Structure formats: structure tokens, C-alpha cells
Length: 176
Picture: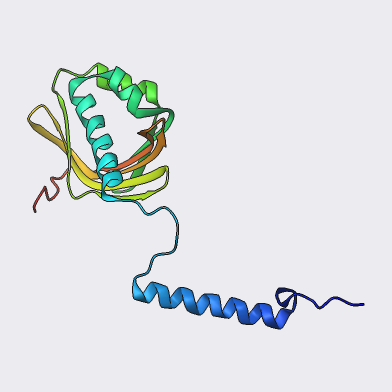
């Protein structure tokens, strides 16, 4: 005796089912209903912002031990700046060079500020995008945008990648 085939094995039934799923997904999106899964809360976003701020605090304090705890040993640090000819140049920096530069600076010399951060969190990964300005002591050095990637490791957010732009002309600051 032949068993009836499953509706999902019949091409026409599968097409109808897929169409229904697509229509339902569109209706959910229009109504504001989010799909199931980890939905980040404001607490996770605040933790990510605090981790970036601790990086800035560690730079200002020249605390390389603190920075080692905040940065993955295989972090990728990339800076993009406009060269004299107007073309962008990209420079990569490893952790050792970054820590050496921070450790060799004068106390309180490195001051970075960010504002209006945009944070996205999904489970154990997060991104933060924010405009920033950078000062050496009280003197403006440059500004641009920071783009952080984080991973949650051992209950804390660790920087796994940092990319930033460098602009020498003053940028619009906080509240501007």
C-alpha cells in the first residue's frame, strides 16, 4: 500500500506555504512585530557604550593593563585619513603598536570624546558607531567617526575591531 506524500514534498504545496510565510513576514514588519530571538535591551546597549568609554579612559590614563583587558589580542585597528592629494589612505595598527603609543604618551595627553553613539546588539556581538573628537592635552588634533565591533567574552564586552576616520578640520561637536 502506498503512503500519502507529505504536503511539504509536493512542489505546489511548498510554493503556497512559502508564499504564506513571505506575506506573514511582511505583515509583521509593517505592524512593528519583531521576529523571535534575542532582543537587546537598553542595558546591553549601555554596557557597550561603557566599554568604549573605558577604552577612552584607559588611553587618557595610559593604563595599558586596563586596555589589554578591553581589547582582544587579535584586534584589527584601521584608520582612514585623507592624504594631501585628497585621496583616502588606510593604515592598520596592531595591539602592540597601539599599546606602545598609548604608554609612551604624556599623562592626560590623549583625550577622546564620542557623542550620539548608535549601538546594535545581537546576542554576544555588538557594534557601536559614533562621531568623536580627539585632543592632545587641550589642543584639538582630529575628529571623525569610530566604528567598534565587540564580542561578549566571559561576561564583558571586548573590542574585536576598531575602525575610525581622521579629519583634521574641526567637526561638529556634541550638541551641534
